[in-house]
Amino acid sequence: MTESPMPFPVPVPHQQSSQRLPGGPVLVTIGDISVEQFRIVSPAGVLPTRGANWWAMDMSRTEERIPGWAIALAIVFALACLLGLLFLLCKERTTTGFVQVSVQSGGRTHTTHVRVSSAHQAADVLARVNYARTVCL
Image 1 (tube, rainbow, N blue to C red):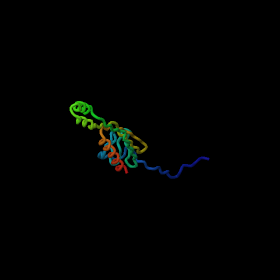
Image 2: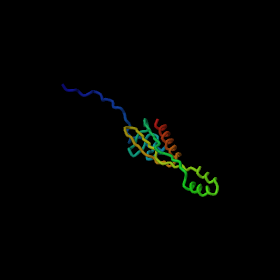
Image 3: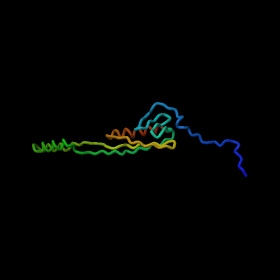
Image 4: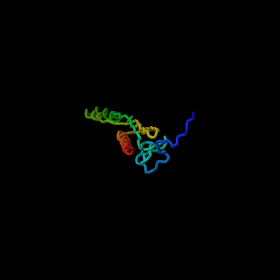
């Protein structure tokens, strides 16, 4: 027995093509990811903002140490008076690393690493990701 064709078309869920998403001004840029009102432009392609999932992980570290000039001045002035030891209280903070940002939408995922050299830059990248989350609701 052969099957007869269905007399009516089967509805297919509408998926808006990422190529047909309207462009607009860039609202926020995170590394190589640009977020517009209706789309996210990344090297992985154009993703819809609706339903996008964002992840951010701070992979930076901040180290604190005594700078070399403070050690030299502490040695020089320690011989003259013990007040030279106060130079050892000077600290120098250095931040190295990156913030890893991932976005997933429309069946595609893109991950980027944003280099940071201060704690303020890491906080700025995390704030940009939070703003992108609000745009993608």
